Image 1: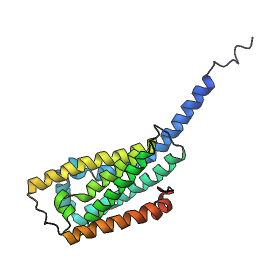
Image 2 (image 1 turned 60 degrees about the vertical axis):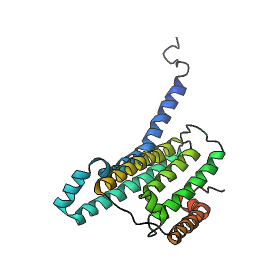
Image 3 (image 1 turned 90 degrees about the vertical axis):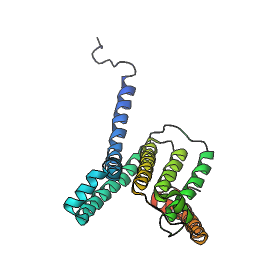
Image 4 (image 1 turned 30 degrees about the horizontal axis):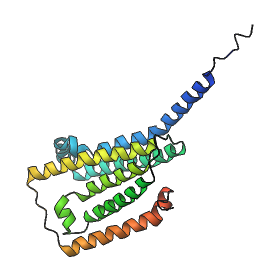
Amino acid sequence: PGQAGRQEPGFGRLETLAIATTYRTTDMVYLLAGLVLFLGLHSVRIVADGWRKQTLARVGEGAYKGVYSLLSLLGFALIVYGFGVARETPVVLWTPPVGMRHAASLLTLVAFILLAAAYVPRNGIKARVHHPMVLGVKAWALAHLLANGNLAHVLLFGAFLVWGVLCFIASRRRDRAAGTQYPAGTWSATATTVVAGGLAWMAFALYLHGWLIGIRPFG
């Protein structure tokens, strides 16, 4: 008697864990979908540059870039939304030591300087590395991986880091194949790049990061 209504020990805990795991996996769907769409589109030149050139010739540059831009925006929106949803129920993989935050701050400063180098003409950084924006993405992604141990952060920044590595390799390979030459940099342009990147980093770290992302790197 009473056996029919008896629950096996630990069943409730296992059931709760299964439900929580399913819920958190669902939270990641939007983030994963956005990463696949956004980074997949930006990987066409890495894995199928020949197909890209043929498609451009067939449909025209305007149509190709229009569809590309719309799908990229959709992917980016899914990443932003999915990352926000995933952060509401964080899955902690590890807790980074405090020192990693200092390393992350320095790496993000480097990332902003590299980003500026992509736009300031005739700077020595671009003359040296050729693709500073991609290197900036790598530095930005690595910085956030060092400072965060949640699953959503690992997926987001790990994916961008892998993409950045592959994109940089592919870009340098295309440069060698095409014999691309980059103009020499000047000291004035390089100094402007460093100052512009540093000021942008300060503005983002001290003000914009908290306003846009909801996290203040320096409290």
